[in-house]
Length: 305
Image 1: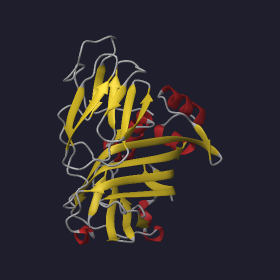
Image 2 (image 1 turned 45 degrees about the vertical axis):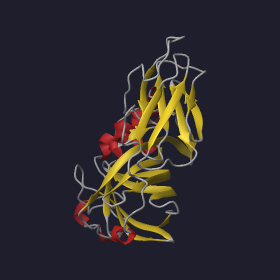
Image 3 (image 1 turned 180 degrees about the vertical axis):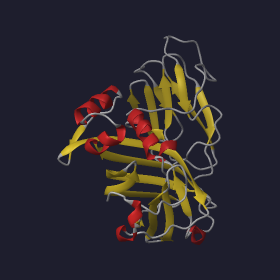
């Protein structure tokens, strides 16, 4: 898995002792002194080169994984919102620490009934790509659209939402695209929500893309004004990406993907790539989504279904 870290920290963090190797910390997420770390997010250290001795030291239980130059520590349980934490990093160069604070995401929603009818815009291109990062960033330029989500129901049985796509470059609903109503999204850990489906179609450049193994999750802000920490994972058929990315054929795209560190795998009688991202912020929109069935799409739209 590739991590495109957004937060940078100096090579020598507070608490560094004398080095016994040339390995340094290139960046961390969160950065030392950050005040907005997502309460369900991992702690990441990017090194100048791999160090097999590196160990994350924290006063909360978690799982450490290593991917090349990246050391990732994932808490076993969500951290507390609006809380200060200090995490140490014991490696061959020393034993520095980073101190940070979580954001207020994760605090209980003040009025769940007030969520009803709220619409949020999720811009996939704003995320931090994890898997398929290079090809994901390239593909995001072709989307040019946000995923619009409206809350239709929110109670102990789960959350029902309506999903639409925006016009290109705007957050207004695209009336030439059908909407999709999804029932029973898991909110057992409210204000956190999650959803998974085997197939999901998204209006994209000159038609639609079908996402396989689509997953999305996030957290409502306490006042309902936004959703934050939104992440997604999806698998795409290479055959659908070829015309969008303008490459010759599937073999050429897979060769390009391989150069970007993305693996093409066999799936559903074809070849697929997986893209995932997190750290997406979705503001509330002052609008309601129209319910648009395929047969309701105006003839002049000329959309391929």
